[in-house]
Length: 354
Image 1 (cartoon, rainbow, N blue to C red):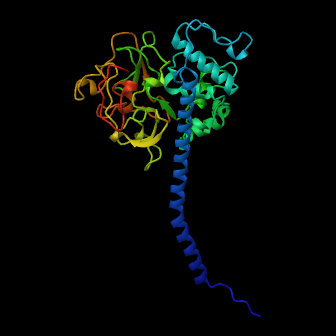
Image 2 (image 1 turned 30 degrees about the vertical axis):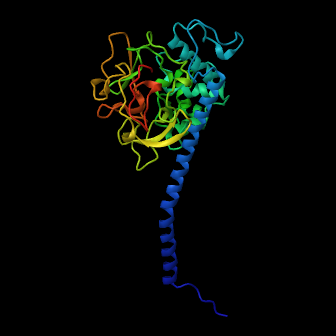
């Protein structure tokens, strides 16, 4: 019997139908992929919230933070991971000793030296949570799936040391404080989470795109979860960028008015919120009882004359430096009343508490 094959026209019609189906399905697949990454990001943040709650219930309501203090020894003499990490000269150095120990112990990084001028409380508090949960470091549960650079660093920290991935903060095959970068997180706690300093020495965002701290006059850590007045309205932790909504660019970092990102609240809910729905924010060293339209609710004031450090808020090539506040509004980074304040779902509260 004579077999009849496809004609050229029939073949072209089939190809056109397949191409049409692909063009219809690809956007749907892309949206499904984005939804999956957002769901994973939310799950990561909720896990950190659960760790915070569990930690607090075990340690007399204290929230996770660096707790090592100056002049004390926290590791046994026979522990090789503790070499050189005793008797810190001040509490700030002690927190860097604690960070180095966690990475040495949990991340198989013996000999990593403590950083000299790092303020770890805002950017590395997640390590305290991970140490509490006995995780092997690095662990991808602190990295947003859309944070592509950190995903690569997290998967291969020693490859990062050798310069296999760009951008890079600097390679160091030998023991170095640069080893800490692959253990970083996409998420950060708000300053009030860790700051128990009196005025005028509280952590404050500055108009130059920096964070002001006072290493010898401030007090960090040992904040109680019971200090939070409205857990469902106060942000505890945030993704540093609005990565999941619309076309992403680095202008959509958490300090901009139009950024929308997952936010972890103190009641352990994770909600996608846009900053234009957030209360304005407030100078943490100003009069917390002042009217909303007072100068204290405008851009943060210059720091006091006491010795202070000005730390770039987003000091990395993957997170370009940008102003902390847009139109003078630091949003949930500097909530009026600190832990007793409200970010979403209510108006500013006047409170002498913090």
